[in-house]
Length: 312
Image (cartoon, rainbow, N blue to C red; front, side, top):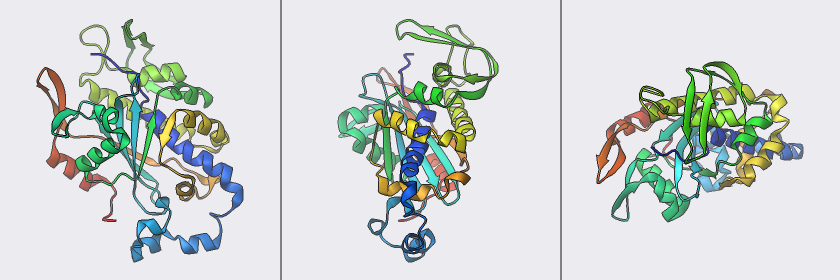
């Protein structure tokens, strides 16, 4: 099976975190957020109690934000990484729903894979489809190519990961070569990319028994370790560097006015609690293609039982 180069989950999540913190750090001296007048006008508890319309306040002040993260393939016509981040800033908790790139969806009367939607209708078509699948409203989106991934990891000194087994894979057609030894080690940008892209070896019996699901678990582990290790003050001092690295390779509808609520006190920032999930379903061969058929009933139950949402 061909692997497509893509921004994987940690690049996306970390870019989001540092994008928010980088901009806020640059604005921190303004002091507007810390003013009594600001909190009096935009108190999240009062917003919920009085059910103020979302247009009356910055989006970030409303609870339970949903951010759609899209990682593009080589020619940037497919979003081969699709993840919905469900974040509660008040509780500092984050859910990540991974959506298989081969998920079968219907658009304009035709069935296709969800990763092809961005090439046909840009982010809006993907957003509409994800909202239909999950029942959650997408507040923000971030679309990234893979170019900043290694730079971000290297700029922060790598990430320590306990690699579960030797990872070896070579695909000369893609110029993809993965060689990582088992055991706890610090992965630099190059090795980090190999780790999150690995699925199987060149021989039978090598790799994850459950294929892409195993890879998703490792990607989500990488997210958790990256955020836990790097969301610290000494690394946040590099926020402007990371912000500009991410910005060069990012398209988003997040605006400066939406960012300030997420960072209350830069000295006391704590990594969020992260839970990872995959869209329930199964694979099926249809019309000479493999598709992932998501289970609507199980998806609804997963969202209702684990995700933050309101009826706003």
